[in-house]
Image (cartoon, rainbow, N blue to C red; front, side, top):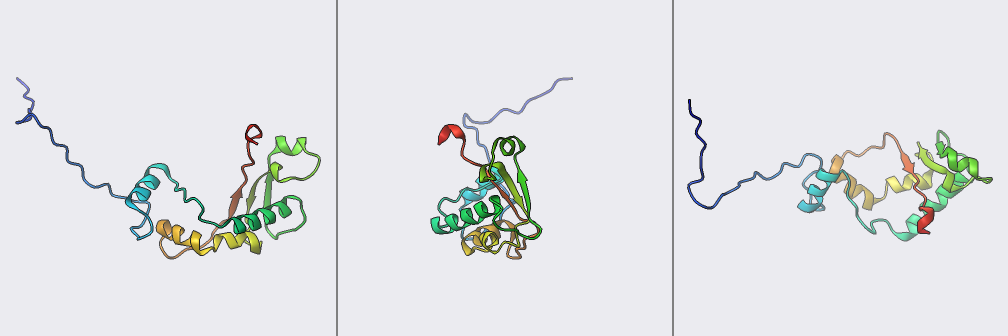
Length: 146
């Protein structure tokens, strides 16, 4: 028994690819096809300067007040990096690695409600947006980069 292999009939080889079906974003006027493809492949999208410096500063100050234990937020879970926390004598933002369930803090939760944030969130969730869980992850600058 012999096996035959199909050979191209010309010297050119054509490759036809179907357009990629994007599963994790909606086709809106906000995201470009390149944005959507990047998100499909990487799981994130970086939008520079989306939130104003003024707002970022307000969120940072609210976070720092929580870290210094100047305010108590009902239901808030503050997670500290044990190695850093043990090496510091004063409660500090560098020791806090994560805040969970911050929805009862009006200033921090305001971030979740910013129209400029929500218009992008809608590209991935659709228009029915709800906060089921809130989490802020703190990544202090690397000591070698400051």
